Each structure stands twice: as C-alpha cells, then as structure tokens.
Image (cartoon, rainbow, N blue to C red; front, side, top):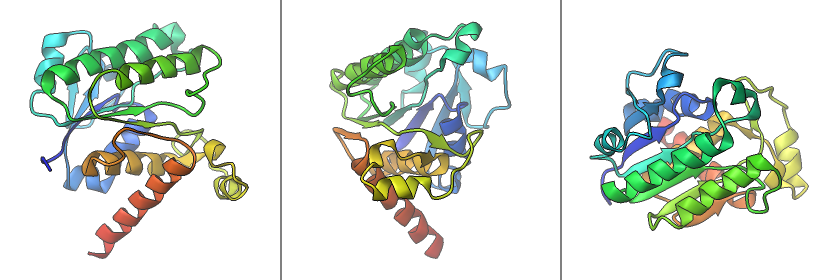
Length: 222
C-alpha cells in the first residue's frame, strides 16, 4: 500500500483540532492541514497548515499534488450564517471542490464527515449533508463516510455513561461520541485505508471506534 499522505480540510473546526492534537498525527503521519482564509484570521494555526480558498483550483491542485487521502471535515451550523456561511457553501460547495480536485490529483481515498440522519434527510442541515455524500459517492474516488451522532468533549458537555447506555439499549446510531474517539477513528481509517465504500453509522461506526482504540493501546504498549 502507498504511504498515506493526508490532506485535512477544515482543520480549524472541533474535529480537526482534536485530530491534529492526537500524538499519532504528530509523530507517525504525513499530514497537511487546511484552513480557509476566514478561519485563519480567527485562531492560531497548527504549523502544518496551509491557508487557501477551496474555490481556487490551481492552489488546491498544488496542495493535493503529493497527497493520497483527503479528509473533508468542513461543515457549518445555522449560528454561523451571520458570518457568511451557508449549508450550500460550507457543506456542499467545499465538498464539490475537493471531490473535483481529488479526481484530478489521483487521490485514492476520500473521507467525509457527515451526520447521522443523512440517509433519510429532514431539514436543510441534513439535506446538505446528503447532497455532499452524493457528490462523494458519484465521484469515482474510493470513499468512507462517517455519520456520527452528537459530539462530547471540546466545547460540548460530557455525559458520562450515556453513550454506553444507549448502545446497550440497541440505540448505537444516536449514542453521542467523544470528539477524541471520532478523531482517532477518522485518522485510523485514513492511515489504514480501511472501510472503503462504507457508510459508518451506528454499530459499524462503533466497531471502527473500538478498532482505533485498540490500535492506540497497541502503540502505547510497544
């Protein structure tokens, strides 16, 4: 398998920040992190970050020139509409730009962070997620789609025991996921080029979470 060289789009969001903070992301992997210009003005960036507008094909092509994997974490919420974000521009438009550039660059794995419910979307948010998923499916680029439920950690409160309880009740699809678990799982799939062609939601997502946790424990012990 080719050495994995990963481009992380949307590295300034909650999941992206968590991913870049993981020890294995700093020590074991070749990662280029991406920030949009408006985000770059708002916060301190990881040293591995390139700032570019995804609507600029030549700059994006250069950023992907030696990459194998694209991780698409960009998305928005209604609270950011006042800053100029929309579901169409942030969720759908950026995915379209990345998919087209991935085809040009010969990317062999595209990982999309979506949301639970995108398979039967109700409301503008989930319809945008579903549209982004369809772009990825139709791209011809091998893909993996993550559909987590609500996040725990970062700026979100932790609810000890709730996730395990819901999974025990057969409600894995709606069980909240810790940001660190989500970030580790995305990074594990990127590193192993695993779960190709899969939509990870509910039980399938939690199987990947457990595999990623096991991998991290093995790294600690060796």
